[in-house]
Length: 176
Ligand code: AR6
Image (cartoon, rainbow, N blue to C red; front, side, top):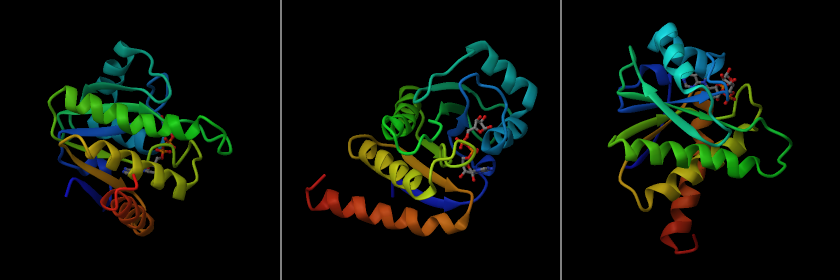
């Protein structure tokens, strides 16, 4: 199964790439970003991010994973939620697509995402889940990669499963 929904702490994942929900200045923040920096080794991760310097919203950059059980970390910057105004959805979808493209371009075969923008950046959970699942599944229609969506809160598994079935059905009936 190319998209796997799991609940847990992304810093414990053994995968080729762990994705970070970053900020534009690539500074160690709170939330999943703080956890990833701490587990990777805060100083060395900050040094690698400082060498890159900046990442625009909806884009993605790559660093080593240092002490994590991964080969690389891809840092992507989600939109700060602005009441559903455009281009929130496009930018959030772009985070997933750019990260997936960057992982493949570097020859990686497995990648784990947190729910980008769904914490400090305020995206409503259900919409964040829908956009994550839709974006990943659309990419996987034409690319080979094992993708994990790691949901910190186990209650998010049910809506994620529901959206996955929804988009699978649309694909098999040829609607999308
Ligand atoms: N593993 C998996 N998911 C996690 C973990 C974890 N260890 N910890 C939190 N989450 P957030 P954002 C979930 O706020 O909204 C940072 O300061 C969390 O429950 O981490 O994109 C950055 O530097 C939520 O569902 O990211 C930026 O400044 C999801 O990860 C800003 O916050 C994302 O929540 C980015 O905010």
